[in-house]
Amino acid sequence: MVGITANPGSGNSKAPQPSSLVGVMGSIGLSGKVNGMVYTAFSDTLAQQVAEKILGGSASVQDVSDVVAELTNMITGNLKSQLCDMGFNCSLSIPSVVRGDDIQVSAKTASISVKNEYTLEGCPDTLVVQVFAALEH
Amino acid sequence: MIHTLINKGFAPYDVQMLFASNGAEGLEVASNEKPDVILLDVTMPVMDGVECLGKLKADPALKDIPVIMLTAEAGKENVLKIAKMGVRDYIVKPFTEANVVDRVSRLVDLKHKGAAAPTAATAGPGKKQKSVTDALKILVVDEHPAIMKSIQKAVSSRGWKVVGCASPTEAAAEVASSVPVDNTPDIILISLAYPNKAALAFYATVRSNPALSRVPIMGLCVKTATFEQNNAKDTGFVGSITKPLDLKELPDRLVRAMDLDNTPLFYSMDEDALVVSMPEDLSEIGSLDLVRYSRARLSGLVNSGHNKLIMDLTGVKKFELPLLRAIACILVEAKALDIAWRIVGSDDDIFTLPTLVASNQKVAAFKDIKNPFEGQATLDIYPDRDAAKKAF
Image (cartoon, rainbow over all chains, first blue to last red; front, side, top):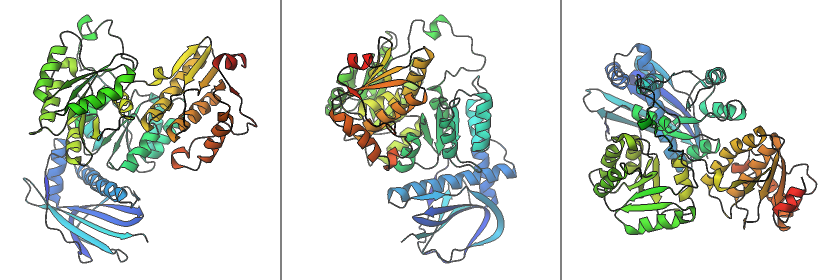
């Protein structure tokens, strides 16, 4: 669908809070045996490039938001599948998208804070994925 | 975004696309337009795809429209959940436009825009729709002869023919030679372990031949080869069968991949009564498909002016959950259509059947199924079909 390979960076399994994100940010909540939030952050340029590549032509602001929402859904869906296979069943909220130059996200009760950057071939900017989670006891 | 991609994929075809932004809108469009196929996303605002699917399947006017789910969640639990609700197929995101078109083309006849009406040559006069009881041809491409033999053993009781090839090159020659003599395979299973993505290249070769464009192709691989399975799925494979092979389930998986109605294996007419002969054993997939296709069978019975059903349990040895669920669902559907039913079986079944159905109603797989024996003081069971027929 996207046709772009994303290569993960080394990642930080104890990412400090609050986490600062920039650009077009998608977010989805997890609730169930694991509770938390998944954030994806694309720079404006990266979001525009990816949207145009997927849609095969120019992309409006709304198109870009739709693409970021859908990609966040795919990333989180994949994460959910892996969590479910490990016994942590959960439900996903529908994605929402916000834009900003300095978006601070944090989750007080999250015992897990993981952040990684992905380089996408042919794009100078990176995709940032931040996950906050707490396992149900 | 999904609308745009799907619209782009179907642009070359003579189809009318209808779009809705959430499940509630989708139900309205489906009610008004009665589409041939519904592509249903899981994640949507207002009403999600799972709730929408439940409502579609509960509506007698819409329940027979085939639904293909689009989901970002490939987990076993999620897939099983939607499969049990009666979806015809599911596509895991990310997908390609070609992938969606390929799946839809298995359910409806897609024609290119501007294509001439089918000619004698293209329409294939006299070429009847395949049935599960035909001598179906299965092409197995695997370098290990033991795999071919296992598949042969699993499908032999169905009367299907297995042709084995040790390499994709040999298989490409086999399928090419099968076209002129109209002996093309009905399904192809190919190992995903060949080097240099040879299975994917074989897929492209097969699809480039118009006579083979609809032959379903499945992968064969070990359970842990998820990367290969995902690649195959993205390429357009119907799915993958993992090794070690589950020989009990295999024939039913092939039936589903070929999109065949499995009821001819179980149903027959005896004078004016429809008889469903339940098998000794039934796999999970076989049970789900039997229930799904039974709806049309039972509706057809009523439409043709008959209303008698005989459920023959004489072949059943043990009431495993998939078998029990199929029995309950068929009887519930018959009840809803005012079809009178009689059961043929042993005296033991009088006690075991209602007890087992009632005791399993708390099991997840049984949760949404009504108890067809509820309110029935005693269950009448007849020793043979003649006795059951006389009892109507």
